[in-house]
Image (cartoon, rainbow, N blue to C red; front, side, top):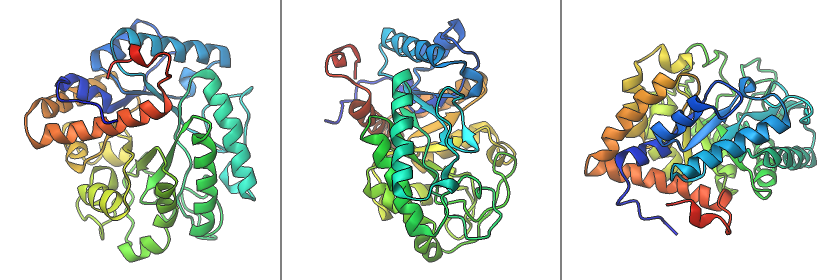
Amino acid sequence: MTPDLSAWSGERLAGQRLMAGFHGTACDAALEGLIAEFHLGGLILFKRNILSPAQLTRLCSAVQAHARSCGLPPLIIAVDQEGGQVARLPPPFTRFPGNPAMQAESDADRFAAVTAAELGAVGINMNLAPVLDVVPEGFAGVMAGRAFTGGPQRVARMGAAVIDGLQRRGVMAVAKHFPGIGRTILDSHLERPVLEAELTDLEASDLVPFQAAVAHAVAGVMLSHILYPRLDPDWPASLSRRIVKGLLRRRMGYAGIVMTDDLEMGAIERCQALDQTVRRVLKAGVDMALICHSRDKVGRAFEIMTRACTSSGAKRRRAQRSVARILAAKQRYLWRENTSASHPM
């Protein structure tokens, strides 16, 4: 059931569209203030936030309790737990060799089963995985060590197995990095790569796994910070209305949460100021913006989003549609029947 968001304040709408990183390993006054002041919809965890399973369980429980005490919906708590090169959770959490080492769909399902159980046990409800980038055989690109091997059809099957395995066990999956960065060499953490590819070329290769993810009702799709000049000559995918609304929503039929990669990465910060970036995120129709390090930048983004959400007309309606998608995922994965009344809509 779609919630009635007509009475929601601009602040409340804006905050649900932000996923923030933070420093520290406990729900201290600074973290409580971050959640309450900016009405956050989600938190993202990094190695800097994680000491042990017991500590992580306390942290996740405490932030959810604080969000509830502030009258907020439950938080999405996300982590990058791909296995291999990108695995935020240290031992005793299970360490997997990563996507390139997976030989069969049974390997993908085992990864998903173990990972979902371990994430769920400590209170993490979203895994920013699987990577669905298609890396051509023998191509020494930036994603070669993180992507499934084989062509687009095999990547689609392996990715779908991970998505299904996570989500049927109660952990949201996020397909990344749309519309595909398997053929890029530059690292978007540092600079903005450019991929010259026609839509027909992408549809024959890079988009195949993402179309499978859509078919398997993946909870989230993460946008890349790559510029695809044949799709949009002006803006990278994470800021492009043509790619978000035109390609992902309309052409591919995706109805779940669309989120950016970290807006503090070099591919974004080196190319324009934060104010312009946030306005482009809103114009593109992105549901959730990730800001993973700076509290000040979270605050500035919140201010800009609040102004847009407070205004009448199209901007507020777009915000309500985005928040409705976020709350729909929260209703499916985060609310429990015996506590739903304590989490106001």
